[in-house]
Length: 617
Image 1: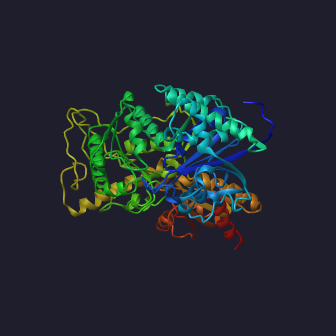
Image 2 (image 1 turned 30 degrees about the vertical axis):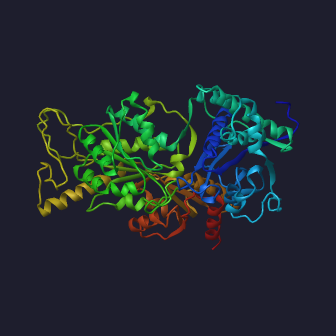
Image 3 (image 1 turned 45 degrees about the vertical axis):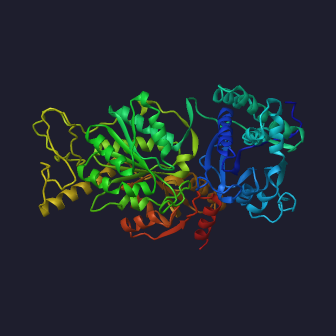
């Protein structure tokens, strides 16, 4: 590469989105850029956005795949709103994303694809490259397809093979725009394709060709640089929410001194947890791919009975199928964790898109009175913490726990400090001692109401459990009406007493005042950014954010938090399920709502608009 002649501007934060047809390699290009961003030392968060259909029609908007990355020299907690730079590999990807590009931003397109059917299938009547509709953007219309083929010509690659590297050419242009070195990505190619040197050389040549093209045609007289984020010293890892969930479970099993068992059926977007755990047999993990969701959770209940830290993972419709077995786990009072990675529903719905619409199902989706603990992770990184926490609660309180994540944080990624096992809290399973003369299957701890866990084979502790109602203490089958009400009350109260150990709900921002923003789960990043933005817009107003990770039971001070503010607005990616739950539990407050159900995360701008209306009323 020659010495740069362009003007270099330093930026604090940037959003880049790669978009193309499904199969154009946008996820790989985005992931490689994220890897490179990690080596630069920026803080960042990513958002892979897949088509909902496995094989959507070619060159149509429904088939557009995207990967967004928000990176900066400041703390980054969301994947960002509007893109500063968009890579659009065909007309459909431009059409689908143009409204989310910053005015004056940079758009890189493969000009070779803006011909013929590609234009009409995207819904254009004329090529947007020629009709002036992109005049408000800095357009880099590069003939990516033909230049990619040219770059590989001397290697003898046919066009079909060569075209698979179009994403790498576009990546080279982005590397030039952000003054990135190519070496780390070259090393990736050398490792990934070590058995095929032709593929290694082809990718290297195409990446360099994209970089040189941008430099030689003076594609952008201005390039950008983003300084390192000042991370504290330590070992860091770029990780997705699904991987963090799997790691949190492994850590919990280690701290509890138990084997980890996963019984699951693959389902988008939860499958990666199963894959991650299956790959960790070296750590003693037992992962079982069951024939369906029901078999998955029932095998987990069996593993819990046998003394393992037992989990099952699923998404949306899979949680529906598990509902009867969750009731069995409630009745047997065995410690299992059900991870639900929420997606757009109902039915098959939008399997690759994000929503928060399983909350009421998690809270109430069972026959009979059968409460379970429900908690929610709020970022890709803290999926680790809340997976660990879910296991700790299940094992120490002898209850099923549902851990809610969602497609946004499960597929999204961020850089987190790798926790040390020694720094994690102790987990003390409620294991019964052999030959304990006072043991009885349903004798409870006075403080937590948790029963003791007698592992089969423990000497002197023969007992029975099952789905039929049990007599208090003895565990004998009982149809006595008074006993049934007592046992249901004890199971309910046991869950509520978990509130004694989860701590108080924190308020971010002003601790009292005009407006309290309330959210839960994976919307944290957008809500925190929206709080910062609305505070700048209304500096005289007192505004706070209460973002909930513990849903059932709610933190004990929730009422105290709410009564400190004049207005409360509950923001959710559903029609208001948490708001309904709050109305049931704390009906004395009035809840304003901001709801979105588009299969997409919140935009900060739309949240600020909603807050502004409330503050100006």
